[in-house]
Image 1 (cartoon, rainbow, N blue to C red):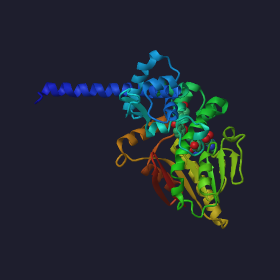
Image 2 (image 1 turned 90 degrees about the horizontal axis):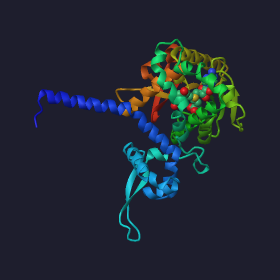
Image 3 (image 1 turned 90 degrees about the vertical axis):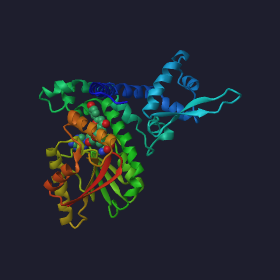
Image 4 (image 1 turned 180 degrees about the vertical axis):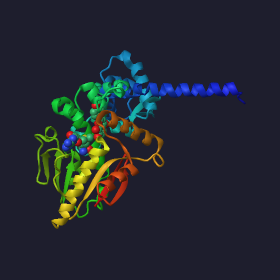
Length: 370
Ligand SMILES: C[S@@+](CC[C@H](N)C(=O)[O-])C[C@H]1O[C@@H](n2cnc3c(N)ncnc32)[C@H](O)[C@@H]1O
Ligand SMILES: O=c1cc(-c2ccc(O)cc2)oc2c(O)c(O)ccc12
């Protein structure tokens, strides 16, 4: 059927309305996901060991029977958002056909961190839980206000002090943030064994801003001959257990970075603006130069962070990288960088070459050479 001009305009506006509603209510999907995590739905489905009917799910979650229909509707949204899937179950004892919920790749990553599911098995429960907590979500309400104010970040507009200081003063926030970052680091175990070439000839690593050391442990498991020093702020590394080849140093990367064959920054440099990153990279360049003069291997810097690539990345990946970019800007004065933006910093800091490996999903591994 041919549409006339006014029908075409109306259709375009209805589409625009739908687009607006989808984005205005994006938070409803996030909050429904949070609800599923609070209720323990992924674990209940996982522990059932086979597709679970809505009736059994209500029982497992200890919910009142009258909430069955509400749970079913929550599940319908989360199935549509690819967090769960539904499959047919052949009825037993002549009960006829039924349907059961199963996990998807996304909900398998959201199982709670039980002892059965610990260490290096990827798990993003703590990451999701932290980012859906009111402490993290509330400041987003004040973006407009922040644009009129003089604080460097929205975190300061809302909490009066920068985030790292806040973490130092609030053990609960510090614990939740570190757990979230550790949970994000677990994903790295999926690619560690691909890095034989990258870590060939490497005997020592300093993981700068390495948090509680999970990524260091993943690397040491894959390359046991290496020794690793994790440098982080004193309140982050206090009371952590060292091993023969894993040491912790409490300090400030802007003051001093211990020397090593590899100076590693995993999701650290995107927390900072260009001036701060340049300062850190120049310091790394100097450390590497001095090692060369001392007859040691010159070494390299390894950065694990996002590289924004609108031309080649899928739309969903680009959107996520841009969300991280504004999150880094509003909360930490940081940014997600394009290849050209990274290159400019490397050259300005005195490095001559770099190589990007893309096998970490949203993140890339960048080797930077003197
Ligand atoms: C986003 S987290 C990344 C942690 C870890 N690399 C990971 O990927 O899980 C950034 C880390 O930088 C640390 N950090 C912030 N300022 C620092 C400083 N001045 N010196 C050393 N570490 C710092 C934080 O405490 C935090 O652990
Ligand atoms: O996923 C995150 C979240 C944060 C974050 C968001 C809001 C806050 O009030 C504090 C922290 O920070 C992150 C971060 O620094 C990082 O390097 C990776 C991920 C996240």
